[in-house]
Length: 373
Figure 1 (spheres, helix red, strand yellow):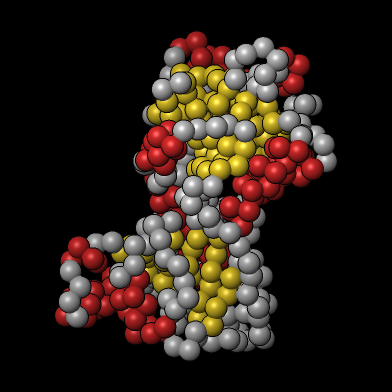
Figure 2 (figure 1 turned 120 degrees about the horizontal axis):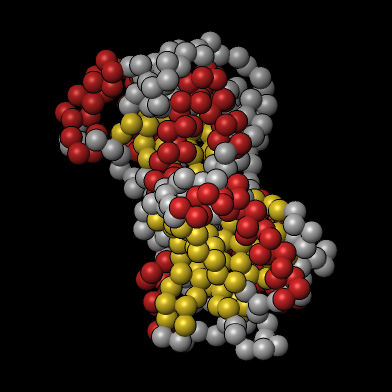
């Protein structure tokens, strides 16, 4: 079976607490550099096509000595970008570089045979008061789960600031020193408002580079057993925010889920989604302590716009639950949304192995969403 269908013994470890929305590590590091007075270069993949090491929206911070935070894919491509970024500390201005990873000379020089294309935008970020305020707002967007757009435009005039930026939020508020008319603001939201990856947007008076800012994708773990505990740990490692939900406080607690971002104890599974915001960037993972509870949670999940719904169990369990839901009025199309048995087929048996199969599937779903407009 994929992922499981196994019942694991339970261990009581005491009461727990809930967590808060985590800060985005890269933006947090950038703000730290600026607060300490250190200017940096931000390198962002703004366009990609075909097979590439990383997709649009991948970014890294380059310091003046070539040290980095984050990655745009490693290898010679990343080394070339780092060298360019270090050069910008002396020359000023921004730079846009495109790489054809399928071209013969590039393949030979960079030892890459991906075959795709990437465009990288390198922008100096000076440690001045304006940028400290702007990127502090970016960090607040991720902490508050507010979707905003960070817009940057290279400036060509000699002695100019190199890059002008602004941050837009859906209410119409604008921070920064890049003035944009209402028509262009509307065009940016139309083009980038539902995107996850960065992109280049041509406007009447030149091209701008847009990075959608939003909180990390969230995994909603329904069930607090052994498999869930391992899934929560792996999710934290690979950059998902994790919310654990269970009807048993002796299992849903901070002692067991020390790396979960939020832990919720519900009165019963009929209220599993109470108080939760479920959007397309939410991943519903159903791992409760009984088939009946799985069905109860699944019936609620199917009424949400969650981008991913997965349920642990055997094919026999799945067929039984699906048949019951069809009798209750759900359609075959509804059930086609569900990944069950959950996880990649890797012969997983232990809780740790099952967690690897589940989180691997979540990573694949996230990567596909990043590639799609």
